[in-house]
Image 1 (cartoon, each protein chain N blue to C red):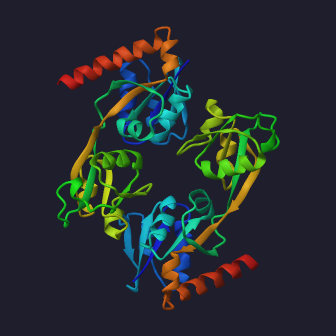
Image 2 (cartoon, rainbow over the protein chains, first blue to last red):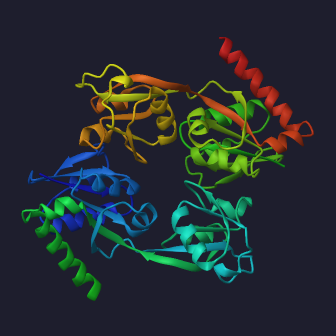
Image 3 (cartoon, rainbow over the protein chains, first blue to last red):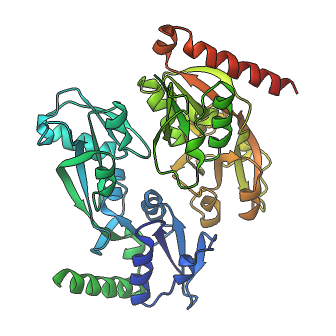
Length: 216
Length: 216
C-alpha cells in the first residue's frame, strides 16, 4: 500500500490531478463536504493523507508517507530529511521582501540595520539577511504578515507573493525576491531505496508530465 | 488611541462581547463578509487588530497593541513578555495527552520511553514529559494532530480538547491533562505603567465581569 501526503489548500487540486495522471484517483478529497483526513484511491492500491502544507515533509521524513507534494518554500524553511524528486511546476509564487508603498526602499540592502522584519518564514529570512550582511530583528508571525508594516511592528515583511493582490490591498510593494517556489514531489529516501518499482512508476509519470509542461 | 489584538476563531465572538461590556464596540469584525484586519470601534477611541491566536502575544509584546485576548495555551507555549491581567473564564479547554482508544495506556507515565509524541505544542509537551522524567521524541505538527496515532507517526498526541468530539471521531481517548486553558486578557507592561486611566477602566470592567461569571 502506497501512502502519499497531500497538502490542504491552494496546491491540493493540481496535486490530485497529477496523481490521477499517474493512475491514482484521490478525487474524493476534493469533495466540498469531505471531512476525512485519510482517503483511499479508487483502485484501492494507495491512500492519501490530507495534511497541512507544513506537515507534508514531516509525514514523508518519518516514512508514514512514501511520497508527498509540497511547496519549495516549506522545504526550504523546515529543512527536513526528504528527497526532492520532481519540480511539478505548478503553484508558482515568489518569496519576497515587501515594504510600504510609501517608503523609499528600493532593495532589501537599503533597509536600516537592526530594523524589524516580520515573517512566517524566519529561517529563510535569517539566511537571506545574513548573506546580505544586514542585521535585522525577525518577528515571527503565523498569519496576516501584511499587518506588520501597517501596525508598525515591522519595517518590512518576507512572505509568499502569488498575484500581489494582498500586498496591494494593504499598501505594500515587493522590492526583492529571495527565491521562486513551485510545488515539488518529495519522497522518503529509504522507501525509494526499497522500492520494487511502484514508486518509480509514479515518479516517471510525474516527471514526464512536468517536463512536458515546463517545456511548453 | 487604544489598540487591542483580538484572536481570530473560536475566542473572537466572546472577546468582542467583553470589550462591548467595557464600552468598545468592535462588532464589525464579526460580520461574515469582513475582510478587514484592522477595525475601529464605533466610538472611534480604539481599534482592533484581527490576528491569529498565536500572534496576539507578539503584537502585545511589541507594544503595537496595548491589550489582547488570547488562550492560556498560547501564552504557555510561546512565553512572550506580556502581562497576564484577567482570567476571562471563557473558551475553556484542556491540554491533554491522548492515545488510541484501543491502546492499554492509562496515564502518560505508562508510555514507552523514547516513543514519539505529536503536537502543535512542543514546548508545553517537552516541559510536561521532562517533569515526568520520561524521554520522548516530539514530532511537531501544525494541524490535524489526531492523524499522528492513526498513521503511526506517533504513539500519543498532546493537544487541546474542548468537547472531545474530534478525539472520539478519530478513535482516540485522553488519558491525562497537562493543564486547563481559558481566555486571558493580556497587556503590554510598559503601556500599563504609562496608562493615564484608560486601560485601567477596561481592566476593571473586564475583571468585574469575569469575577461575576466565575462566582456563578
